[in-house]
Image (cartoon, rainbow, N blue to C red):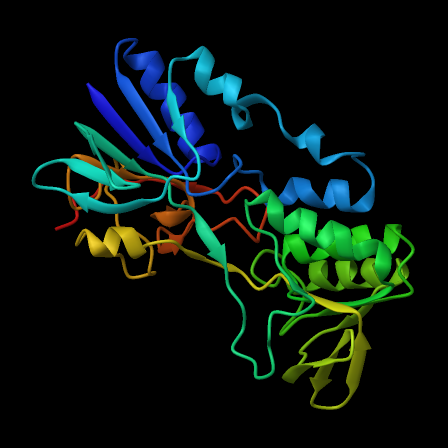
Amino acid sequence: MKVCIIGAGDSGAIAALQVRRLDTNAQIDVFSKRAELGRPPCEMPLVLSGTVAHWEELIRGLRTRPFYEKRSINIHLNTEVTNIFRKQKYVIAKGQRYDYDKLILALGATPSLPSLSGLDGKNEFVLSTDMADGVALGNTIPKCDKTAVIGGSFIGLEIAAALKSRGYRNVYLLARRDILRAHLDKDMSEILQSMIKEKGVELITHARIENIRSQGEGKRVILTERELKVDFVFFATGAEPNVELAQKASLRIGETGAIAVNQYLQTSDPDIYAIGDCMENWDVITGSKRKNSTGNQCHPHRLHSRPEHHPE
């Protein structure tokens, strides 16, 4: 059995581990276009706040090379898979061919930025599963003391808390609606908002951002009714599933924009599976389709797979 796994985040690593447990003789190849193995975004604020002293402390367990080496799993870093040939059942990575019997897509998600004029990439930060994002933000934090955190998600709250713990003079937390509106009732959200303000974070709900501009070494956040001058902007505005490779292979994309799967996590090709943030799942309570994109959420979605016909 030859198994190829595209993506070396936690989903890809756990998939590789389970395949090895089921088949001690399987040839398993895991591919990642990144130079390092992935890290959950929700762990990075611990380093940014100083609760965890060094980035190296996040490198453990299934996020290390020995995890793969011990289990005879081939890990290919700096190796992007550029094509999937479904009929012949092989992938192309760095110009080389890798055959598979089963293929697992653990492509993850990418932080999404709002459509605002003036964004130029300067002093603008996000957190993904790539620790390079966290390191870049960590190098900037000691040089500054004013920031705007845009987005009332879990990761936005964690970053705001981390910066206040580092002695930031001004931390503005901007949300389009109430904090964690998708997860909390109004009364609970109001309690949380009071606690945020007590911690010294200036909370701006129902914020209407007209544009964001660079000014010297800092940023100007232009709201409808006021202007904020900050050193940098952090975006906690959600994530979008990485589906480009699946689209290129003509796999079915679901109504949410993530890769459609059945109850066995098979895509529209029964020999190709999708897992983690790139796949479409079902809400356990409502049964509705949703994206399983936790990259900028950092909390456990209550999701499950329910039986349905195989996607066509």
